[in-house]
Length: 288
Image (cartoon, rainbow, N blue to C red; front, top):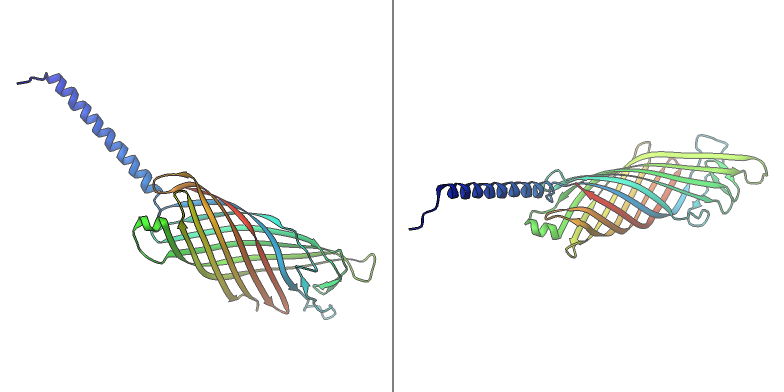
């Protein structure tokens, strides 16, 4: 029979207890981290840059002035030729439930160009080389809902969501130049409109590899806005997302590169503005 001194047994018991305590602590922190960055409970913040061109057309008159000249159609492709501009924006996505998330985005656009030929805008006749500036401010608030229930490992590889939201757009168009047919009569005219555009659509993504995700969205809306205006809107995009820092059940930093095309068409009170934006977009997603 092998006799073990009692103090050795006591030390072994203490050691086992310490190992057990360390194991419990490690499991606790591992589970805490896993739960915190679980797929269904993510808070994501993103910064993005959108290099967009501006195309379309507009006809803006001045119905309140009976002596104003009739509005003329101004092509944003020919009469005005806008260069590509960089737009910066911020966004926040909160997956507050297993199947539902809230997405908020804000962005600003500013395009400038010279008028190629004489045109009437806001009841005033501007000669060639007049300055036109178009500003857009957008605030998007949208809810997304998963369309199915499935195993989590499948969700990580493929996901499809229905989206419903509203885009509040603020458009400011200003023109500065000289009156057509004169040499020293300076003109200024401006038109501003803020309106909501509800929309619905889909978000989807599929994982191509351990650190690469392909995602896309398709959104559309048409709605009579306030003040007897109506608006149509679509937004399309496709992106490749690269995980730069990865945990077991979530990505903390992502580089998101893609292409986006969107359009809105506003009509009312004899005015019409159609604007199309398209170009590459880059996001930096930080997931908490």
